[in-house]
Length: 81
Image 1 (cartoon, rainbow, N blue to C red):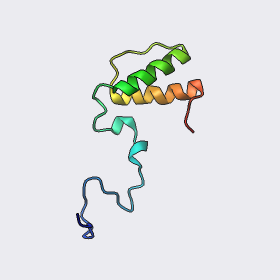
Image 2: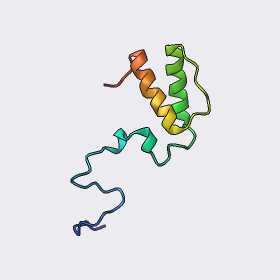
Image 3: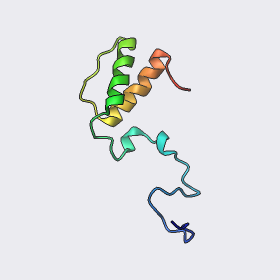
Image 4: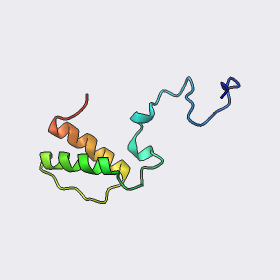
């Protein structure tokens, strides 16, 4: 493995003007956002929805599930920040 010092763009690389952390990307911009939600998302979303007294569709995609998780974390006081 060698360092890329030519300045060419590479996959997975960050540049000095790329300040977006992948974990902080808007779910709507995720490449896999339209895939079905993951099992961990489904389980956590079920827990949060029960605590919040809400019912959600069980056929959400990854991006939708993530948005609901963030919203319900705020609503239930489970927000990590």
